Length: 221
Ligand SMILES: Cc1cc2nc3c(=O)[nH]c(=O)nc-3n(C[C@H](O)[C@H](O)[C@H](O)COP(=O)(O)OP(=O)(O)OC[C@H]3O[C@@H](n4cnc5c(N)ncnc54)[C@H](O)[C@@H]3O)c2cc1C
Image (cartoon, rainbow, N blue to C red; front, top):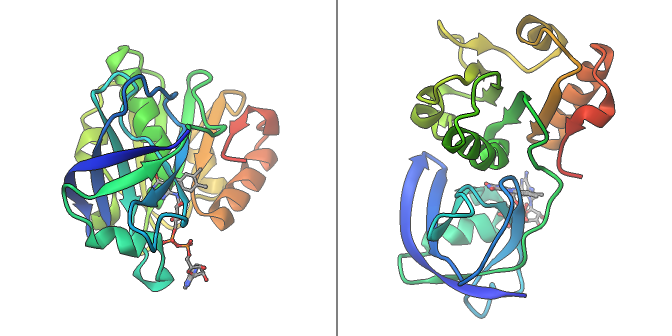
């Protein structure tokens, strides 16, 4: 079932990521980690649906998406830059395979962190963050989405990985077998993975080589 929802606020998160706060349709529900098809409520864009993840929690009285723009795609994420408060998006029912299963490590690349924003916010509210780890890969420090919020999450262990900057306090390079081995001591824990496809493929292979059961790796199928 589709819903047309007005934009209440648009806030900058990084140079190419914005937060869209939307009206919430009555009774709308989802599970942290789920996404929905989104289109822009304008005649030329209504049929152009793209998946985005809810970064709010189900009990908030608004909806929130955290969206990275790709100007070179000439697509929906670029067109979203032209929207203002009062414009509307069309959203559909929630779907997706990323859901919390148990304590473990979240591995995200860039905007792939969005399902983990909702899951980690939920664990924080429940007071159950301790024992979880977030390995967060970005090109540069300025690209880290919601960094202050993640860094302030008590009990959450965070490993920031930067591919294009070599700075103290950050891992430098890509999320590879050696990096995973340095930070994860038990590969039988639940593992959650979301990022660009080449990153997901590389990390899945590395995790398998390190002894992780592919069944214990949650990712969007
Ligand atoms: C389940 C799921 C959840 C997601 N959640 C989020 C989220 O919460 N936040 C978020 O930011 N993203 C999220 N994404 C990714 C998001 O859906 C895409 O970034 C978005 O669909 C891109 O839409 P677009 O119209 O801008 O570009 P696209 O639909 O990717 O591309 C439009 C056109 O641009 C061209 N194109 C494609 N790639 C390139 C390229 N590299 N260079 C030049 N041209 C190109 C193609 O010809 C294409 O027709 C999610 C994806 C999935 C599958």
